Length: 111
Length: 115
Image 1: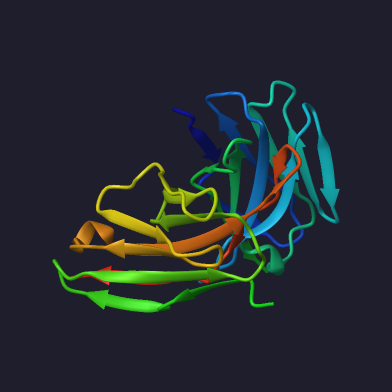
Image 2: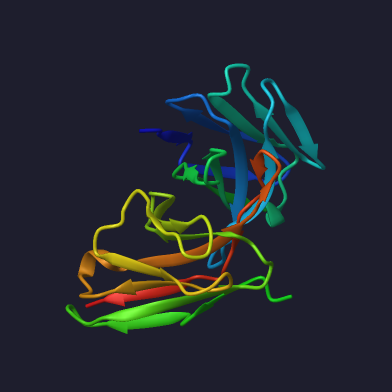
C-alpha cells in the first residue's frame, strides 16, 4: 500500500535560520496536505497541493509539490519561536478523503 | 461553532476494560475519521465513515469498533483494552467539494493509558 516517508524526524534550528522538511511517497498522490501540530495540541491544516509542480507560499512558508506528484517539501525562512511544533505531510486520495500521514518533522527553535 | 469535539480528554483503563470514545462535529460534514498517534509514527487511520450509516476499516482496525450514530457523531469503542492501545486518539471530519476533499478538521484528542 501507499507509504509516506518524511525527513528529517527532528530539526533543531536557531531563530532566524531557514530549514526544509521533505516528504516522499511510494505512489503517485492525488494531492498532498500539510498540517502543523503544536506540543500537546491537535493537527491543524496548513495547505493542500493538487497540481504537479505546484508551489504555494504562506508568509515565511513555501510548499512545493513535485512534478511526478510523489514528493513534496516545506521550506521555512527566518524561523521564529512560533514555528515550534511537528509538521506532518499527508498524502490524500479522492475516493474517501483518506490521508496517509508521514511520521512528521519535530521542529525545535533555539532563541 | 465548536468544530470537532471529543470526550473524554484523558482516560486511564486497566487491561481488559472497555470504553467508548465520543466524537461530534457541527460542520455538517459527511466524512469522519478516527486516528491514533504514537510517538515517531505520525497519525494512523483506525476507521473511517464516508457518510451516515457507513463505516470502513483503515490501516490499524484490530481491537476497535466504530459506530456512526448520525451525521454528527462517530464513536470509537475498545471492547477489551490492551496496553498496546495506549495512545492519543484523534477524531477528524471532512467534506467533498466537487472532485476533491477539503482539509480534515481535528478534535482536541483523547489521551488514553491502558495499564
